[in-house]
Image (cartoon, rainbow, N blue to C red):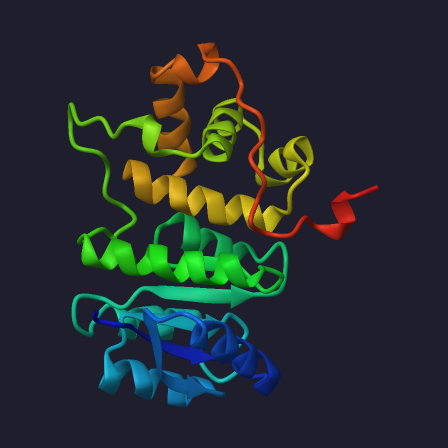
Length: 230
């Protein structure tokens, strides 16, 4: 079995050690470089061409655009997952919604970390746009089945079609804003859409989202935002 080659980069040694410990329990992952600064991260991407790179979104000596630009020039394109600990990062949210990267909140549990890495690797193996290709629109007449969405993703798609913001959706479903962003990125990838406007139009055009009975909320893999629990 070919292992998924991963580069990890974070300013904090304890975070790097934690990620290494989690992935060491998974037979399908191997960490090819563990970096504590942006320069070594860029070097690892350039020379090792990993399958996935998990990067601290707040590395001080390199910009997110530099990381994404390099990732798009090596091999078939290296999916970038930004490990983010700050809510309300508008630049990072915009990059994720454009399909340029994936956001993984730092309060994600180990299961969500592994699931996100696997999803990014599966997207690359299937030739799906993982970085830099988020502006592609669905081809005329093409319909991606909504059955591939989870119950939670269908809920979020419906609420987007009603014009709710991420914060409003989070309050409605009692989940963290970062969780909403992760779900939206997965929805965009599954349906091959590029932004909320297209997603809302798709939901409205397929009125089964509104006519079908609402499913019970499945448990989220991410922890709830403590601020949302009163």
